[in-house]
Image 1 (cartoon, rainbow, N blue to C red):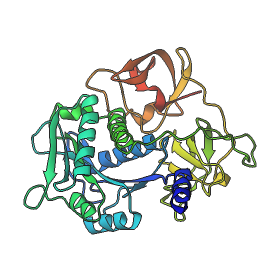
Image 2: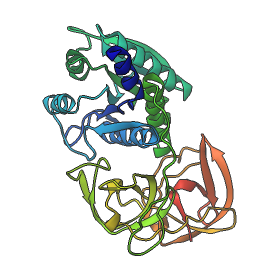
Image 3: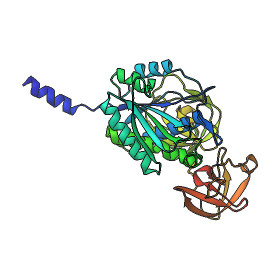
Image 4: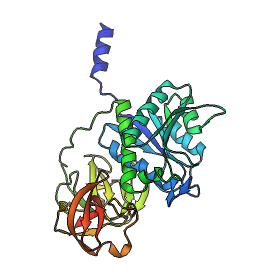
Length: 354
């Protein structure tokens, strides 16, 4: 009778959320590979943040090894893993040395890590990258600490190398933010599939609102007053401090210490959870349409299908200068607008309607 009741009890318990450790390789003075105008440490961090953004819609917790351009030793990263006890460790990296394609490494004795590596390669191939296969990390051959040390703790860990930055063909699929976002989402999809993650239930409307009025919902554009930005809605210490910024709310956590996950729309670098008191009243984002006037956000890059794709839009063309949208279409999987005054394509997500 006791066993029956215990089984019933456990079936009724809610399964604990999975935790994923995203390790953006290199950082600070250690740039990693650098070729064709791309620094590996910067690309790694962007991909990690895009993966985190994708996973924010699923029932899981993500932990970032770093959220800024700072150096971390292998011992510091391993210590983070030991303290956090995640279900999965993913090191995000890019390659160099004249090769071509992607490869994923796993500790040679870990069958679970190998299974995830195979899923990750499949997602890389789904976005058009050539596969060099999954490869064992082992003593004397690809002996990577971030595969070896988590495995010793019983935690599956892989190291992904998506592309060779010094290869003129490979670099074309990592030379824009849109490309890095697709890569980050590939990591996210692999994690979701491997761990069997479920999408989060739709968040109810906020029961309380900032003093400026108006319920804040996912998708709202808000004014962040500036201040502390946190890695999670429950974090006790801030991950960074940012100035005032026009932001988009991507996730809400009603009742949490820091209830709004915000991402800068104006290039000011806000990316994380913030306090309700730091967020102003929401304004509905106006859709970008043909014929409307827009400004180009800081950090925007050119789109289109020419060699200019991925290059930064000059500061002289950024807000507050206004442009007219003459056409909208999808290029390389990104919805882009043709701006009449400069005859150039820019991602719609990098534009703000006036």
